[in-house]
Image (cartoon, rainbow, N blue to C red; front, side, top):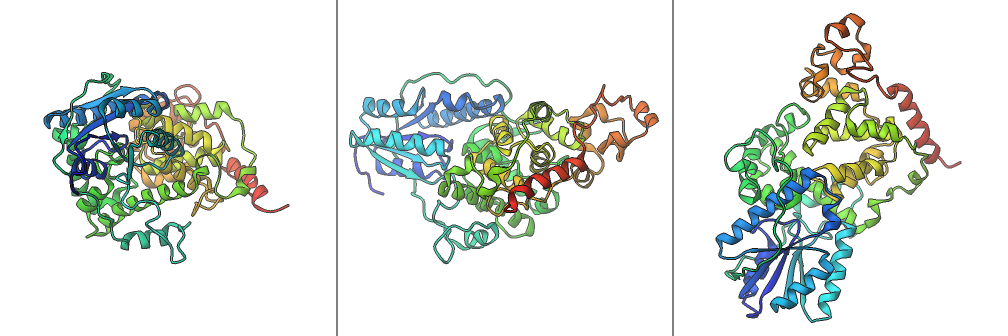
Length: 468
């Protein structure tokens, strides 16, 4: 793209904290002689983020700032409401265009529309790109021209849809401007067990983590459901903050083996949920299947609190919720099981669980979070049937057969054998005593009967599913 003007462009970074494979950055640097890199620390978002996510964001921002400084520029950080900050920065630097990578959440869409209107009043161009997805919303359509409500046909079209080309980066000068300081992260921004570049935040560390994930991708389909091992890609936070593009992941991993194809398929799920939310913004607060709006949920605050704290008395559930509480991350299989327990066994509204996950998870991504919670609740498109209720004991026995995951996160049960650790209430008193456990003291009794609560959930769903 030829240089259009000597006036600078602003690249407003949000969920795209990288320079490589970034269409907003590429378009700005190829069409302007100079660019200003900007990030706005919006308190409305920071206040809704748990410490793990805030720490990861700040670390990735520091890495982006270092990369820009290596180019002779700077990352301008400003605190405040983007609706006021963006027009002010544009005016003070004489910029004639703003480039962004778009997002699909209702919050982001409303914010961007407000900023775009303010900029239009001063004849400042707005350029939106889709650097957060493989395919932009609207690019994957059924033969009739609509968006598939079922994942499998969506994936078939997604897989054969050619990638729309992204701009090539140019050689624009990166401007340096003084802004607000970056806060210090509250905790370690990355998990344990990483070394070298892979232990670093930002896009350099993200690419190293991608190479590690690609090296074990052949085993992905066999190992991704075992929470005690590193069987998933563990790239969700990098995709959340955009230190990697989804296209880069797809290119590096490829689909040459079943495991690799299964990993890339997860990117299609990610696109599908984003496309669905873009088309139906009410999914964040309302079931796609409207009959389920009438479910009589329980206001079980004590049960909800026990669930968040990992003291439900169901070991596999508690292990997952403690992993989430302590690290800000949870294995995907366990996310489904813990969500099912809240919605189906405690009969607590899925929206309460979705909000909790969105607050605590380091990789919390609104369309994925909402889509997966509606899937578990049976209320969304192509959802798990309403009568599918994960049995957390059987799930633990199947995917954590030796209890290694439970022993790590619920260490008070570590003295039990591989059978009893999944349902300590079924163990004999001598076995519990030998392990140093008194139920109700060292570890709680189950807060709900799994069989009875399953029947209760089926009745609640059946009551609204069948017309009266």
